[in-house]
Image (cartoon, rainbow, N blue to C red):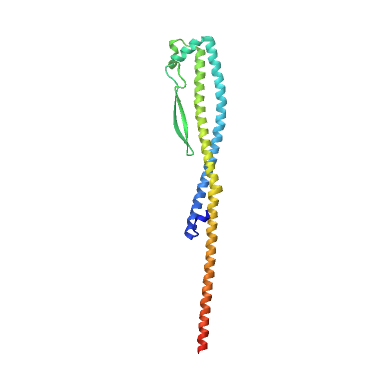
Length: 221
C-alpha cells in the first residue's frame, strides 16, 4: 500500500483521518459482533429448551390422539378434524435485532374453541377435546420453534459476516494504513533532512564565494 501513495503532508493528514474513521468503524463492528454473540447465545439456550418442550408436547399429542382413536374410534377422530370450521394459518413478517432483519412468525387459529371445531354437530368427547388441545399446543410450539430456528440461522450468518469484516480491518486494512502512515512520515523526515543538508551546503557555498571575492578584492588593493 505504501508504494501506491504520495509522500506528502496532505496525504499524511488524510491518511490519519482515514485511520481514525476506520478505527471507529472497527470498534463499532466489534461491539455489534459481541452484541450479536450475546443475542445468539441467549436465543440458543431458549431454543434448546423449546426443542425439549416440543418433543415432550409431540409425545403427549401422540398419546392423546391414540387414546381418542382407541376409545372413540378413528372415524370419530377424523370426523372431528373435518368438522373444524377454521384452519391454522401462519404469517411471516420482519423484526430487527441489532440491525439484523429476522423473521417474525405469527399464527392464527392455532387453538380452536369447541364451536370452531364443530364438535357440537357430532357430539363432544373429552378424549377428542384433549387430543385437539394437545395438537393445538403442538402447533403453537412448532410455530415458535420455527421462528427461533430461522432467527438463529440469520444471526449466525450475520455474526460470520461481521467477524470477517472485523478480521479484515484488524489484520489487513488498519495495519496497511498504519504502515503507509509510517512510510510517509519517514519519507517526509528524509526529505526534510535532505533539504536541510542542501540549504547548509548552499549557505556554505555562498559564504565561500563571498570570502573568495573579499580576498580577491583585498589583493587587488
